[in-house]
Each structure stands twice: as structure tokens, then as C-alpha cells.
Image 1 (spheres, protein in one colour):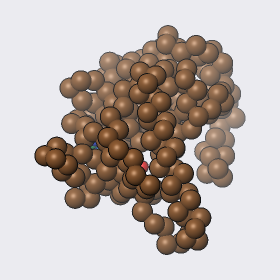
Image 2: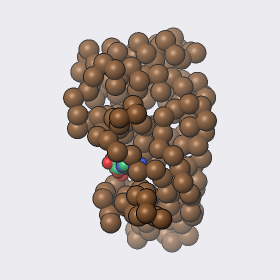
Image 3: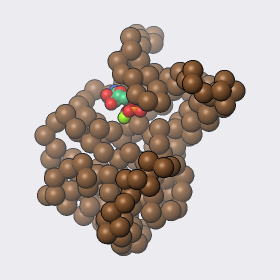
Length: 195
Ligand SMILES: Nc1ncnc2c1ncn2[C@@H]1O[C@H](COP(=O)(O)OP(=O)(O)O)[C@@H](O)[C@H]1O
Ligand SMILES: [Mg+2]
């Protein structure tokens, strides 16, 4: 059963050996040249799964990956609510901040770190949607992860996030300086739109 459709992928809820699993499938894009389309979908699927596995190894709370196909990824079905659909607490944000610090400390960025991609479960928060994630040491890309969160939540909520991030990240100083610089420039939006 399809439960979601984004720009890049469809999300299905399937039953496998009596257990519910989530399948994220990158379907064909008819407007792209066939061969290029397959290469892109294959590469992005591998990259998303690879980064999720590395993130899990680094201690970032992510859903467990069950299997990876050419264009699909099977993962644990989380039982919870997205932060965007719940009352966000300081505790949620502290966990989200330290999770991001762990990710960044292992040279990965999420690319879309907002309350729409963090789920609150009984066992704590889980980070999802690594479709835009990347392996990089780039301070600006790390700062963008914080900037997107800063723009998405209230000032006080963000403060809990940032202080947990700073406490748990090795080069938080550089990242926070870069964040201030991005805000000063105030033209990040257009730059990402351009790629
Ligand atoms: N492991 C999971 N468990 C439960 N729900 C999930 C899981 N992964 C994704 N979802 C649901 O599917 C939606 C879309 O998944 P996501 O990976 O964010 O893809 P998109 O790129 O379309 O945003 C999420 O907002 C969430 O509601
Ligand atoms: Mg998403």
C-alpha cells in the first residue's frame, strides 16, 4: 500500500513475513532520458542506504535497514509521529541536536534536517529521509543543516537544539560561525535552488 509520494520516491507500507516494513522506491521519471534516469536512481538509492548505514554505525538513531535493491530500500517501520505533527519539546530538540553532531562528526550531512524528517517514537527520536544526504567535511553544508532547522522551529526550541549540537560536536565553533555568515548573507535560499 502506498503511503506517501515525494519528488524523488514513493513510500510503501508492506507486510513481509508477518511484519510491517517500509519500502522507499525510486520510480522512473518519464521526463528524463532512460539511461540517465536509471543511473541517477541507482546511485541515489545506494548513496541513501550507504549513508544511513554509516550513520547508524556512528550512533545516529535511524530506522534499521532491512534490504537494499537497485531502486528500493526496505527498512524498519517506525511507530511514531513526525516532529512537524507534534508538540516539539526541548528534549526532542536536544536529542536532534546531538544526533546531528554525531552525523557531522563522522563527516556526513543530512541535507534536509527539519521536523518533517525526524520522528518521535517511544524509544526516542529517529532521523529519516537521507535522500539529500552527503559525505563531506564541508563546514558550509554542515551549517545549512542547522540553518534549515533554525528556520523551521521557534527561537527557544532552536536554542535547545543548538546547545546540544555544540556540546556534542567537535568543530561546532566553525559550523556556528559559518551559520552566522550564511544568515548574514541571507541568500542561501537561491543558492540551493540553483544546486
Ligand atoms: N521508516 C519509516 N517508518 C515509518 N514511516 C516512514 C519511514 N520512512 C518514511 N516514513 C514516512 O514516509 C514519509 C516520506 O518519507 P521520506 O523518507 O521523508 O521521503 P520523502 O523524500 O518523500 O520526504 C515520511 O514523512 C514518513 O511519514
Ligand atoms: Mg521527507
